[in-house]
Length: 219
Image (cartoon, rainbow, N blue to C red; front, top):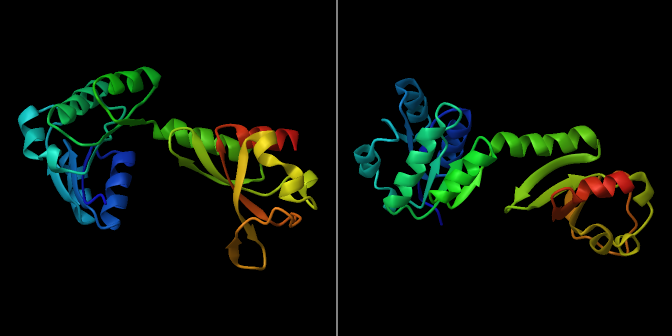
């Protein structure tokens, strides 16, 4: 279980990550070069420090090799700083480094200098929100690993009255229904392949990117 984390870069993304981890009971060291951001992080229970993340000796004093995860959340302010910080964390023996990228080139460079995982929160949110704009039956999405999504959606009208066995979603769309939320029952149910779908059902499905869009466009 993850117990200790460093979050470096306290913009909107980094601050949100640091706050969420601290609220979940982790020992969080929140770092930024701006004193005012460090004071905000200290206010929600995180240990906080103000220094430049490209300062080798300052980063070393945080003992990244003893932390369960190190998040380099430096954003648009300095692409160079995020690359240097990520490289320093790896060189100092950090077990798991998650770095934030601004674009594909930045992501490739972060991978080359050793990031175990690279995230682009703005792009990822934009892609998920675009699905909700395009398809009013998509109620929410959650990434699952690098290329899978958990999606909540209402079944297309053409699916209503048909069973999951009849619809053959895994073979036709590479979509697996893992649960059904039924109005009036107040519970999430295991999918019954022989139970006809209702218009007010909510399907919880696992699929690759764009599979749900294909289903809704064809369904």
